[in-house]
Length: 315
Image (cartoon, rainbow, N blue to C red; front, side, top):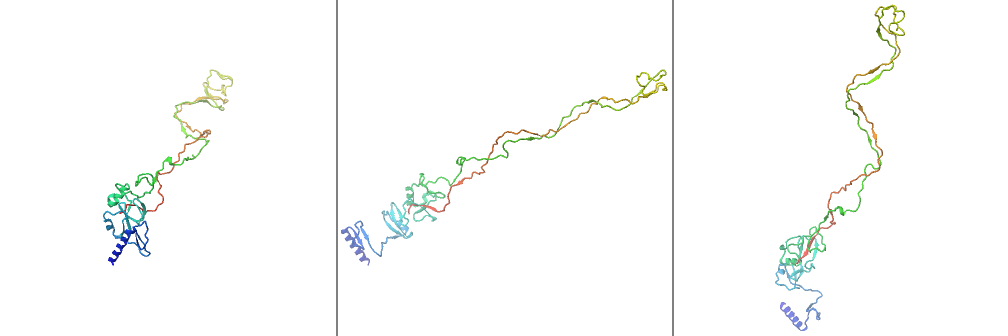
């Protein structure tokens, strides 16, 4: 069976040398194809190798296809690396995924050293500009911002300064404004001690009163008093003995002058009455209004879904 197949295949290629195209399953192969296979119920079966066997092929030619039994996919060798055709990726492509680790030539961007990669992957990474380690995509967003490829910069928070605030005025109101008056009520006080002093004055008119006296006479007196003018003040001189002492009768009202003796030191209590100022003119007060802030940075990170980021470096 095998012998007949080889003989038939040899015959086909021998015929192809004459016509320059070979057709299997067709008598009219395409002029642009060296070999055209045609079937309505069969396909082409590529060589089946494990990943280790595929990688062990020495100096594979560009365009070489094999089916990898470990990845269950068709691989093609291109530009020095094997490419998984199922992934439909080229070196340097980036994707997000829920995979937790490297897979099918896709390498997780977790900042690891390039020395942890295979020799072919290190070469691919170097061709992309990575020389020491892979970029670390943790908590970073991918964006084309003109910076070096693979560099991570910036932050997910921003601290606002006064210049970032809107141009608004903070206002406040004092308790009382405009014209008003003030009332002052000093506390009662006492004077200091004063020196000794006296007072002068006169009494008011006093009522009838009498004065005591002693009169002398040397002879009989008939109806008059010795040394007195006017009445005899009620003295009976005719019958009075020598050297009699007596009293005047009641006399009319009169006043007396007096001077008090020195008074001791003393103090006076003084109570100053309350006073209200005149109304003051309108005036203003300076008001400081606190913002109430605590200088907490503002998060600018949008709501997001957590995935892992990968770069395709081949196998």
